[in-house]
Amino acid sequence: MRALLLFDLDGTLVQSNGAGTIAIDRTFSELFGITGAAHRVDWRGKPDTRIFREILEACGLEPTPDRLAAARQSYLHHLKQLVGDHPGSLPPGIPAVLEAAAVDPRFRLALGTGNLEEGCRAKLAVHDLNRFFPVGGFAEDGEDRRELIRAAWIRSARYYWHQDSPRAGGEALRFFDRVIVIGDTPLDIDAAAANGFYSLAVATGNHTLAQLVACRPTLAFPDLADVHSVLQAVAALPAHPWADPTRAQPLPAPADPATGLGLSSPTPPATPSAGHTHSQ
Image 1: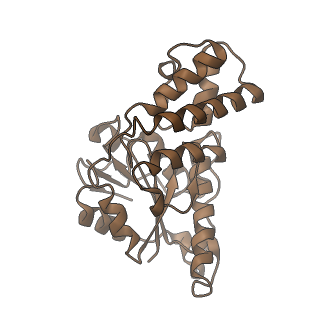
Image 2 (image 1 turned 135 degrees about the horizontal axis):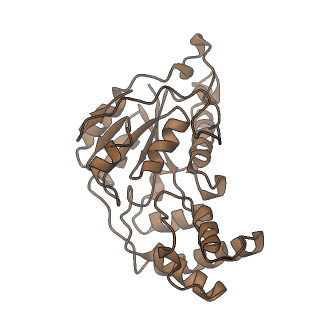
Image 3 (image 1 turned 90 degrees about the vertical axis):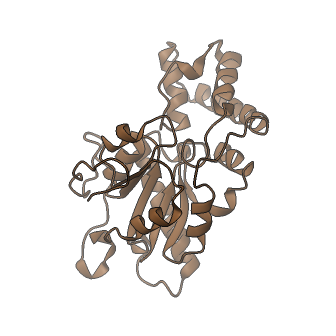
């Protein structure tokens, strides 16, 4: 088996200590005279680019390309200055689960985060976590989390297929027989289902385990501290049908923007029970 583990950042890999919030507030105060910008929208699980647009819209300003570009540049400037003093903390199981997965031939690691890549790398650098993630999907890949998760899968499949060539053979996009989106918000679960992937919800962010389980993830854990159980649960998931080239199954299609469901995604799983759950 080859399983791609796509990790969210904020709330999953790092529990924030406010650097991003302060950076957003400073950016919109300086550029547009908007105070308390970070609290004007529900930003949980949303890409940075979408957050910037929604703040401008909430304040009656048109999110023009110039305004969005200025916000991005200012935000990254402030974030890189702040993250050293506001590094946040590591939730239970980080980095232990990364260290274990990195040396296990069954797994490959990548990012699937709504952060701008430069900001993401800055947040990870203070905890020495960039070494686990050579590739990923970021806010630059789309305002819809479903889009950036799909981009993360495609980019990661091509990267790791190239790393393993010529041993890998076959098609790059069938290199992984399982794709698991690991995150702490309902939008992570939605993005996985929309692309026909598995999801592993972890209650180390702003949502409780019960709230996450209600969104029907494939797996759910309170945290990633029990490294063995987490990785064994992932390894026990059946391979995606489309990953087997002998079955002539189509690859996952892009999400339908009208419904949010992947055009070739599986039937949504049954509601899992609380705690360590497994469905689908």
